[in-house]
Length: 177
Image 1 (spheres, helix red, strand yellow):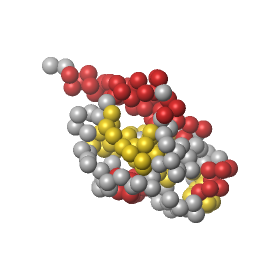
Image 2 (cartoon, rainbow, N blue to C red):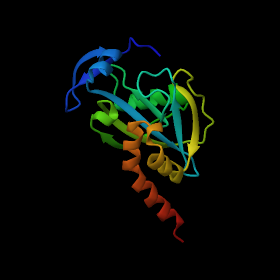
Image 3 (tube, one colour):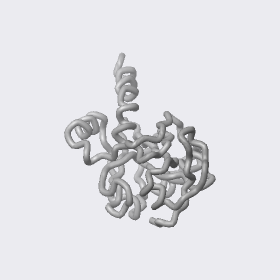
C-alpha cells in the first residue's frame, strides 16, 4: 500500500476542487471519493473482507466485499471495476449501482457509490489490503451489527442499514409459493 497516492478532493456537491496526498486527505478529513461493492453468491450470502492491520483507516475490521478510493481523474464505475480486480481478482464488466452515500463521518468524509454483483469465488485476495474473507448470511450480519458493531467498519454498518430491508424483501418474494 502506497501512502503517496493522490486523491481528488471534492466539495459538498462531489465536484473536484483539487488534489491532495492520501495521508493529507485522511488526516485533514477532506471530502473525497470511494466505491464499495457487495458481492453476493447464489445462496444469498454476502462476501466480507477483513481489512489488513496495515491499513491507515479501519485496520483489522470487517468491511464490504470490495472497498477502495477513486484514483485521480477516475470515475466511480472505472474504480469499481479496478478495485474488484485488485482486491479479489474479480473481473467485472459493469457492476450494478445501488445507491450513493454523501460524504459524512461514518464514511470518513467519502462520497461512496455502492455496487452489487453476484459471484461464487474463489477469490484471490490482495494480502496487502485484506487479511481474510468469508461468506456470511444476513442473520449472521444482523447479529454482528447488534452485538459487536466495533468489528465492522462504520461504512459497512451504514451500507447494511440501507440494503438490509431490500434483502428481507427479496427473501420474502423468493420464498412465496
